Image 1 (cartoon, rainbow, N blue to C red):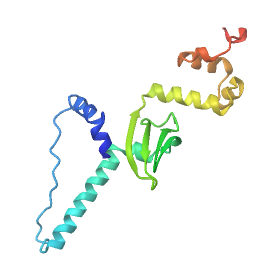
Image 2: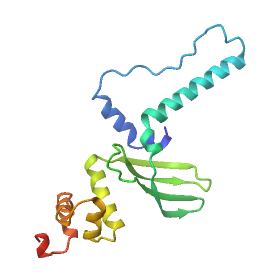
Image 3: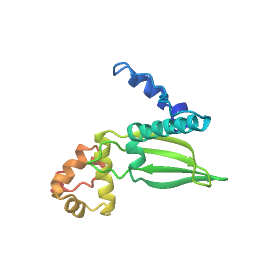
Length: 175
């Protein structure tokens, strides 16, 4: 896990979520003595194998969607060798876990700070709707066609998402 996740609000989130489930098994590294460990080099190799196993478990269980999703990045600020970047997910409606956030990276691209927020299903739908509108230059007719619906349904979705104020008042749209 990236250290900033533990130091920032992620630790408190883990603490709160711990109350929702049953007891968590103790995480311990176990190197089985099968008689094959006869040298210090054998022990080092076994320890490295255990470390790789833990890293794989972390990447597949705790951070799978965060690490495998394609994000769009925007450079917000630069100071010396560091850049502040914000990122957005693809807002894919068929992908359950998506994050928004920001990171600070050094000139080599290594992350010095990372902050993410997991989006709810409703937030993903709103992001998808806004991204679709922007992709169609905020034109209702072409956005509706791109989404495979009609303008009246698109307007209903916009209002239901809480974006009704974005619409110009047009009698044919009921407003």
